[in-house]
Length: 186
Image 1 (cartoon, rainbow, N blue to C red):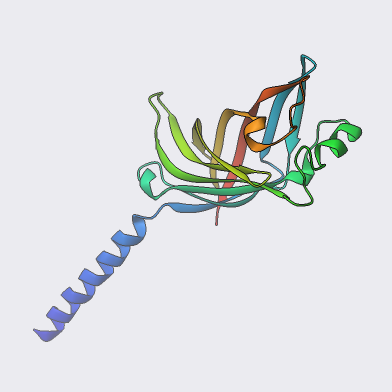
Image 2 (image 1 turned 90 degrees about the vertical axis):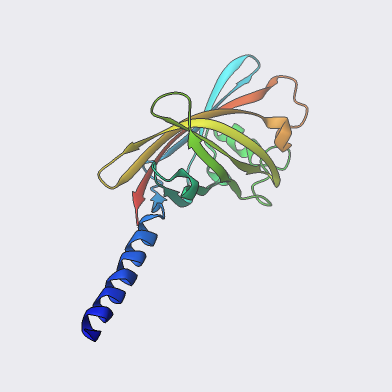
């Protein structure tokens, strides 16, 4: 009788542990060589494309438990590449990204919800560029892969909000950032 009681109590605690661990989102790590962060901005009315590499961080994502999901990622600002060495060197200086003092661009989500568009999600969070943090919100997709997820999304920001580029008249204020993040479970 005592043995049965002990087994029931033990079974109860095992069930609680299993249920509580399944309530947490799975953890994923961005894979830098496969992930892409690209941007487009107009300079003198001409589109300039660029990209950033060196993405790191942690992603917790569970489509059925979005309240437990989180994006906490950063990218190395020193990796900015527009296929123009002189321009890239200039973009790393103090009036643009000031990479010596602010080596990372980071994003930390505060809320993830399902979007009104089928198959999409909406993320809200804080983007930090050059020491300035601003809230942003954008839609993204999360496609399962054999090892994790592929997250795709895009958003537009005003560079002046982040004190990037000063009052340069030929440079457009708005730029579009496109994300294609491959994240594997760890």
